[in-house]
Amino acid sequence: MHYSSSLISGLALLGSAQAAFYSKNSPVLQVGAKNYDRLIAKSNHTSIVEFYAPWCGHCQNLKPAYEKAATNLAGLAHVAAVDCDDDANKALCSTMGVRGFPTLKIVRPGKKTGAPMVEDYNGARTATGIVEAVVDKINNHVKRVTDKDLSDFLSEGGEERPRALLFTEKGTTSALLRSIAIDFLGVIPVGQVRSKESAAVEKFGITSFPTLVVLPGGDKEAVAYIGDMKKAPIVEFLSQFGSPNPDPAPSKSDKKAKKPKAKKSEEPAAAEEPVVVAEPEPEASEQQPPAKAQPPPIATLMTADELAKECLGPKTGTCVLALVPEEKHEGADALLETLADLVQRNVQANRALFPLYAVPAVNPRHGALVGGLKLAGEVELVAVNAKRGWWRHYEGDYSLTSVAEWVDAIRLSEGAKSKLPEGIVVEAESAETQESAKAEEATQEAHDEL
Ligand SMILES: *[C@@H]1O[C@H](CO)[C@@H](O)[C@H](O)[C@H]1NC(C)=O
Image 1 (cartoon, rainbow, N blue to C red):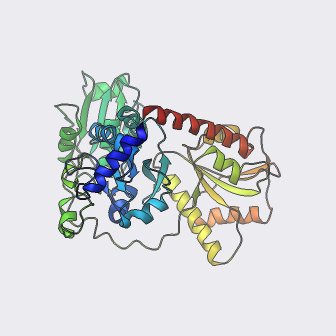
Image 2: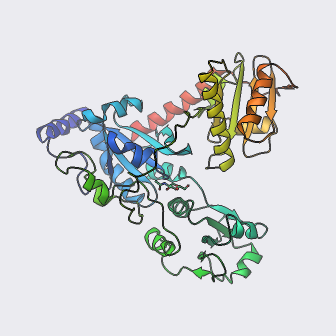
Image 3: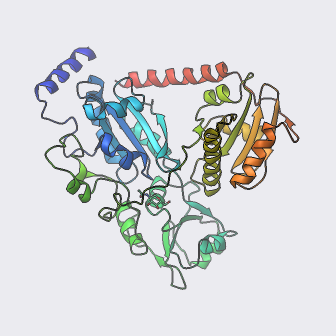
């Protein structure tokens, strides 16, 4: 039954090749191979991307829910769509591993610009399902500030810089505040203070919650925000104290750079771009200095199964794991850069090296690993040989010299090894079975929706 209606809408679309799948006024951001990197992969914001084909019936069915999700997520995350039927986008869709339509992926900034974390969205194809999943994946750069570390928060990075503090009764950080912190990343650090932190509350004379306060820097007086707790007015307020980042959203400069006629399928929704940002400076994205040749990042193990297969299976040999937090973290960035550098140097010198991986906290086995090995730091580097049952803990700084020395010692089998505790090594199959059962469940759910 579904099939015939899909077929009809598919034929109808073929008949009117002119009409775009998502109209000009759609809240869905239309992205193509040319701007995918800039708008999605390099964005500081989280995106959900639908890879679709205009003739696909399930894509048609998803459209209303997807547009609703886009409206609901405006200002919080990007909701984008790529037309995989467009020849210009075919390579992109295949690189992204798209095998059926629609395919939905959540993309969010990883440790390195341009190397985002990508995961399939297999949840319900409803606006609510999509919104909840995306909101859950908005990175959190909001610092929880307590009475104890208030003075650190106020002095970090120099007394002169502006900062924002939200006083709230809530223990969790809202998607709204997280998205604001992303807009002002590196410009205005954003903190959140709970109402029970009485010294901080008293210091700023806060009498009601939530209250947002800006500390302009230097000895300037704190300024409280008065207005709706909504994205646009808050961003406008904060912009008086520091310019938000040029989020790579379609802007006027994009349109100027293109011949309007040639690119029918690209960015017709530019004017409707839902994420609230200040006007990016023209050419800001075009004039970035050419990046100095960076070594390719080391591989990331996102799933329990990958981890079991590559490093923690009963038969896996020596491998190095960098355990890193989910959120952007300077130490983690420094370590991953050093490891990437190390790998590249070994490749260039034609020297064999055991595999090195990043394991972000989103990996379901990250916690078990950290707990099992009794690691205390936010960023940890370990070497493991599951087959032989040993592991080693790195405790130095993240300079290339120091890390390389440690790696060389392992290579030469020098230095003390610890015995791997129980429960660290798992059969890939058991991890896999669990995962595929979950995936099946999710797929079933998705089908129920259709
Ligand atoms: C992303 O955040 C960084 C600060 O961490 C900022 O320098 C950069 O301009 C932001 N990128 C975009 C595209 O907004």
